[in-house]
Image 1 (cartoon, rainbow, N blue to C red):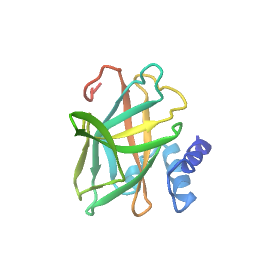
Image 2 (cartoon, one colour):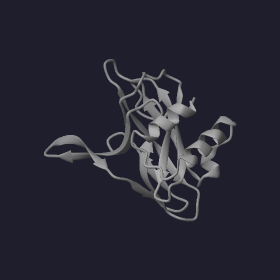
Image 3 (cartoon, one colour):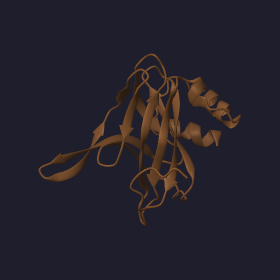
Image 4 (cartoon, helix red, strand yellow):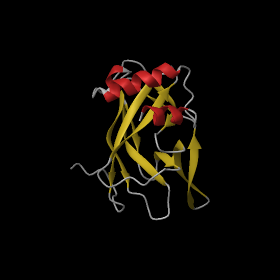
Amino acid sequence: MIKELLVSKTRGLNLRNGLKIGAFVLVWMMGLNPSLLMGGVGLEAGWTRGVAVGSDRIAVYGIVTNDTERPVEIVDFAMPGAAHVMLHESVLENGRMRMRHIDGFVVPPQGRTQLEPLGLHLMVMGLDQAPDVGDRLSILAEDAGGNIHELVFTVQSLDSLEFEDN
């Protein structure tokens, strides 16, 4: 698992220090919540739909929370077992819905940022394998200060329209 996470670093996560991801993984493997130890940013009610047949991508939704007293700018994302994770925004252009890449976003102090269908969301592309319904997965989010935060989400059925609290 550690090797897989370190490989994801070379797929787009611009970490200034490889020790940060190593420490994150070590804390995570010990059963602790690294998000609480590394800045108080997390994902509430995180969810995705299952992978459609013939697809290698998923969209991730939920509420990004910031429990700190300072704004946190999220600048990059990575996920083990995926080629890319990008922040997208759905916009209406010339009567058609399109996804537009967004470089990052700021979560205000003690604030929340909504990721939702037809709005701001994370696109996970190039999945090595399709996750199963019920799987809990993690995206690593890097803030402008180089801190790593874990965004945990659950795979729901392909026809899901919102978070299903099981």
